[in-house]
Length: 246
Image (tube, rainbow, N blue to C red; front, side):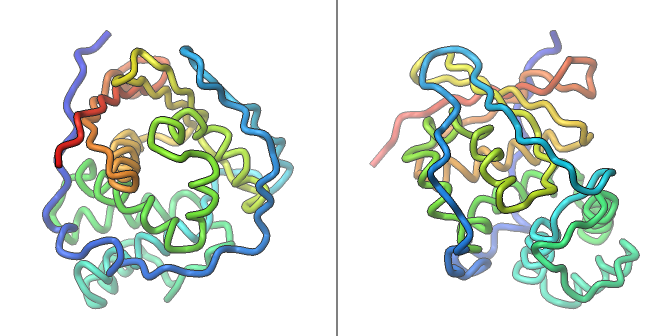
């Protein structure tokens, strides 16, 4: 097994605005139904939920909410002219993305590549920065109640991430989420198993986990234990919970 590697620090280029400034809170979507039983368990071991069947369009797609989050992050942190240059580099004609509309994965990957070129930043740093802000963005768009339902703290949310994705498929019927499993090593160390057909998103998951820590005011360190692109069957991450200091 490859040696675990520390995650990259988040770029200071994205740290000049807090999440409340970037993403003003929006009303809770009215279509959520929170009565589905939670599938994950609190016992030690890997817990998976069963994804719903998706009979929607074929091919790899992401919903516009993801691309719109990238757009709003860049505009908030760097201004409209930078976003306009990013959009031009990526060959994107849309002035704004529709949250509930499906877009090809290539649109999102092109945006990430264009941001790297415009900001002269490594893809790993851009992805971690975006992942870290994604939790705050989703909360601001009305999904805070759903997140609270699936986890009153970071540990419980980690155990229920796959069940959360199953629920999101009732809102986004053509969602193609990764498969997630949480392994409890001890009270202060979890292992997250991440399986996805989408390549290159390891560092986005690192940022996502950091963003979860911020949401719950829970200090954590994230270590990439193994990666599919290095020959492993799937990505795994070690999540170490640190003592809370006053």
